[in-house]
Length: 227
Ligand code: HEM
View (cartoon, rainbow, N blue to C red):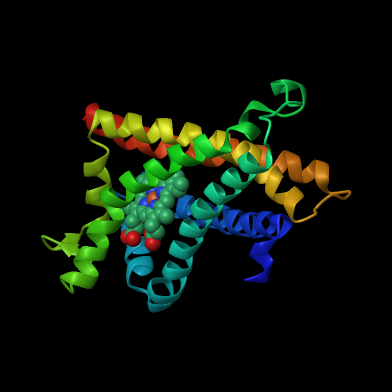
């Protein structure tokens, strides 16, 4: 693919996959936040069942999402390797905070932490879903006569260790987005009169979305511990 042969092309493609994942994260958050509604999971169950059984979501959007996730991680590692090999004398002129932020130099580490989280997260939620639907052939969404999604979510956040691991991952996510959002806009050449507003929006997104996920995890954990 021609676009991926040049370093600018790779950065551009990386930015496009980043925008796509940020959009996914927003819709993922919008659905998950309904799990704290005072209706004992009714809305969350309804939305999860729709997303989990709708043909367009399952057979079109889901494969695109998986491609987007894999592409972003693989391209992230390739960009890091290329940057390092281009930089024969390691950062002779880069004296740390003087000409780049700590986070911008460590995207690969925050990215790797998020990858570790995504693997744990898939083991927790996604693989069991795929198993139930595509291997066992059960598309009912039911367990013991009731929708299973909310129960599974509550069950996962009973564990102290899992809740702590999720919260740590969301902190890394925030750090990653803090640099990633604005960097992605720069890669697609969005340098104009809206730059300041975009930067503020990027910072807000990078703080509020991960904080919202922390809230959901801690909410379900405390609800269990205090009940
Ligand atoms: C408290 C926070 C979160 C909760 C409760 C949660 C819950 C879930 C659940 C229940 C599923 C299974 C959906 C299904 O297939 O039926 C899922 C899938 C997924 N989650 Fe999360 N999630 C959280 C945070 C995140 C974050 C921060 C990311 C990204 C960094 C993420 C990425 C994904 C991905 C990529 C999938 C698979 C895509 C799909 O649903 O098809 N999640 N999550």
